[in-house]
Image 1: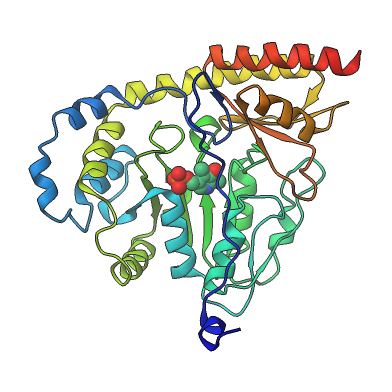
Image 2: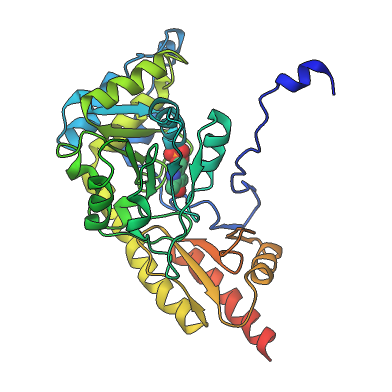
Amino acid sequence: MKPWEQNIRKVIPYVPGEQPNKEGMVKLNTNENPYPPAPGVKQVLQGMDTDILRLYPDPTIKRLGEELAHFYHLNNDQVFVGVGSDDVLAMAFMTFFNSEKPILFPDISYSFYPVWCDLLRIPYNRPALGEDFCIVKEDYYPGNGGVVLANPNAPTSVYEELSIIEDIIQHNQDVIVIVDEAYIDFAGDSALELINKYENLLVVQTFSKSRSMAGMRIGYAMGNASLIKALNDVKYSFNSYTMNQTAILAGVEAVKDIDYFGKSIQKIIVTRKKAESKLKELGFSFPKSGANFIFASHDKIPAKEIFDALRQNNIYVRYFNAPRIDNYLRITIGTDNEMNQLFDFLVNFIRKYTE
Ligand SMILES: *Cc1c(COP(=O)(O)O)cnc(C)c1O
């Protein structure tokens, strides 16, 4: 080993879902929204004055931050905006988890959390979810360096009632509790209503799923003004101009269109309900989904075999070769047409397999 090699910061990176781009493919593998962003987004991008690209963007991201604050009935100093919630979460891990004590997050959760911990040298423990993939809240009572909960959880789709989340926050008022709500708009009550009650709570959300803008990279955190200031201090110590001009303009338009937002979520929830009954009919079981995906296991056929067969037929879902979840498929809710293509294939495949 060369001497300088010892000083390279080594990390095993997060592996994002593949992004194939094939004719006629059915892409249900990365929880993207099958519907386009709000019409105002297209309009503002088509009419954009590209001369503004000459200038640095507003480092404070004021317009988008204010639009979000208005939408969520918050003060402007309670919102932090970043380059997708991955960026916001990484920034939050760097800002708030600086203790010798391990932070806590479930054994099955967003697989980026342990990667940031390893990168930033944050110790962590992963209490096991129950058999039903539900949180065992008492596991989060012992002293720790912070808590991270995805709600609804990924990749299980399980939504925990706000009372469970609040109980965990109540027992952890000496550390920061981050609730990652990437899928909350498809579920139930957000922990946002608790940020004025608990100054140690940070709620993180994204434009990537419910707002159909995974390609634009916008995420945000909401919490007590002092948490937001701490996040900004770290951000300005790292990269002041995180959000580009285009993303700021497009983001504002997406937040403004409340009507479109509600309708597009509703369409996905309706398709999810249909998909749940169809999957049941086909011999799959899964926890009740609070997200734009279903985490399903078949009673006879190993998940990996279904995954491979689907892939060969240009239908992409996600498979995780990890303990406890290696017999599950994570299936994103697409359009009705995409879901029908999936089901047509599965009906045939399962019939042939079980013949
Ligand atoms: C999709 C997802 C994110 C990241 O979303 P981006 O805003 O696209 O970076 C964060 N957390 C969870 C649980 C997710 O599923």
